[in-house]
Image (cartoon, rainbow, N blue to C red; front, side):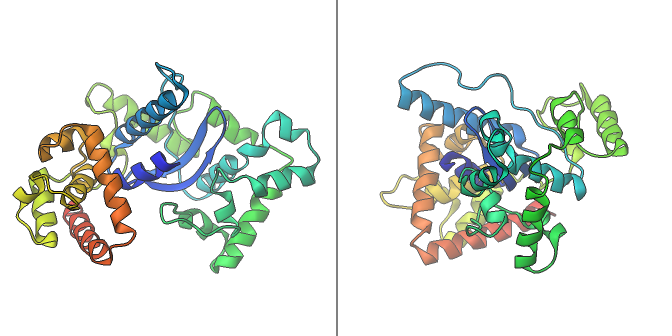
Length: 302
């Protein structure tokens, strides 16, 4: 979860729902910068390194490439969030329990966003349930109540239609017209792009040049852009620059390290982690970082 949360911020990901299981995990996300491949590569690499170090093992941890499908909005978004949140009870051991015990297991399961959706816990800053809950009423309490009923009233059954799409060869989740559109675009674009993502499939934020990012960050921090390249003890400058380069210039940590004259991508990751710690107690730094983000978002939408 720590590595997921860090990369939500770094790669400008909107996380709508999630659920972590013992052998796999699910996430309902939006990628405004069309950088799903970079996000998943960074997350899987970081977690594999952590896991291998902790358990003194080597080699791959995940089996094959992750699966990803575009989702049509509204009803499909709502149904998919329900599927994700019901994962903890749709396993053989729990399905054998009485319905009341299944509900108890669902309410106590901490490794998903369901408890935030039904108001059992405070919604963290990195989770955005709003687009889903907006379909369940206007007032917050009404949304929590209606969403809980929507999920738990279907506890005894599985959504067979959704399952067939998720586990089958279909390219997208939605009605026939939406799926046909995705299939048509995919066929048309095969071979045209070397990028891992098809940037024309969604609205994206424009990728900024590194010098643009450093110029804006420098103005807000009151320094020249060259100051970000200088190592200073207990300075937040390099952490700020690293975050903005990864997020708005869409650089990998290795690429950001080259721009900032830092030794490695791992060192860039440490700079960003240190920045997050400083932001927790430095009000002035939070204000400056927020100003930088506001200006860079505006530039990326022009």
